[in-house]
Image 1 (cartoon, rainbow, N blue to C red):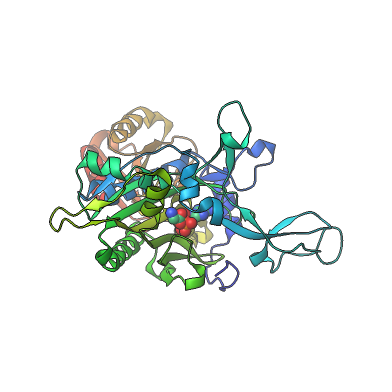
Image 2 (image 1 turned 135 degrees about the horizontal axis):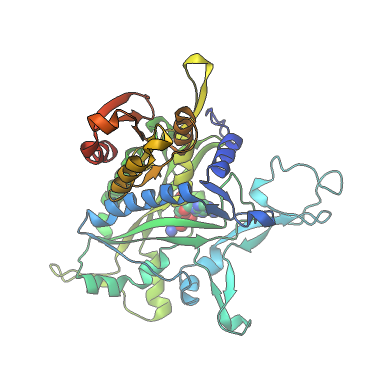
Length: 442
Ligand code: GAP
């Protein structure tokens, strides 16, 4: 399914979101002062916090809370044979056509709505040719074929090549998984929809190794877990769905796949894939590396190549889904308007902003902000009238604003304003950190 095939029913306009992201420092074009570079994005102060919170939550759920999953952090460039074994050198390509007149290159399956040739009239296309999506580099001083290496196209291949080492080091038995979060690179022909299709992006992947007979059971288990995760981080259930892959869409390593899709302003699109990779990867690496990656069941003494159920989520795509889901424009009483990012408090980049009502109160208020920072990402803002400061925090998605006023000096209390309801509560200063923590994590 392409982005344009399913009519969008969302009210958020991408241009409004993209503009807010740049203005408020969530996400903007990489190398912006040079005009940007297509398919590459930078995360600013708010964006990096949002993305880090998402990654931390994934790691917490997928690694820390489980004794059957181990984490790793592997190198981005690995032995080039890895990509021959994985099938990426042979199969990881998109069919491309070139226009003989304007020399532009397009994906052959995405020609609908591409517009006219800049040389006039219709494009004059070549026959489709396969174009490999892996980004190449060279190791050392030589630029010969022998020195060619690839920036990884998916993070999971190192999990397969590290499988034996990690299993033995961590003394794991089947079923168990290895997880990692990291950068992946694809030379996408047509990067588009903001960060949705980028050339450099982050994935969070779990490869769960199981006995062949248990594949289907674990596939269903991980599909349910991962679908629940997206709701837990605050994405609205009506904006999420599952979609099984048709046999002709399956990647070369896949026996079955189900996508978790999110309803972006440009239509339903994949944010995560749950894949039954069978024994493809470990069998191929056994063959190409000449190392035995089989497993012996210590009960039955049966020797076999473990099968793999994979969960592979795009961190950038999920961050984009969080941004789309959070964005709201609201009319307020008195004809006022606000743009508010309604992030789940646990994912919000800033948890609390401390705002002294007057510059004269800056010192004790700043002390409160410093104390809060030991437990959460707190912000201090003394400039502008209080209404403007609230609006700035609404746009940043800060769930709580703590106002320090002249009464705080005598009654030892502050006013906490909740972002979505704008409800205000008066609470003791010494209890603020616990009060906030309970609501952020709760
Ligand atoms: N290891 C399996 C794998 O890489 P994939 O479906 O190709 O599977 C998994 O990618 C996830 O990575 C996708 O669901 C998506 O969220 C993210 N992803 C893939 N290509 C991307 C791109 N060009 N830009 C941003 N995210 C991408």
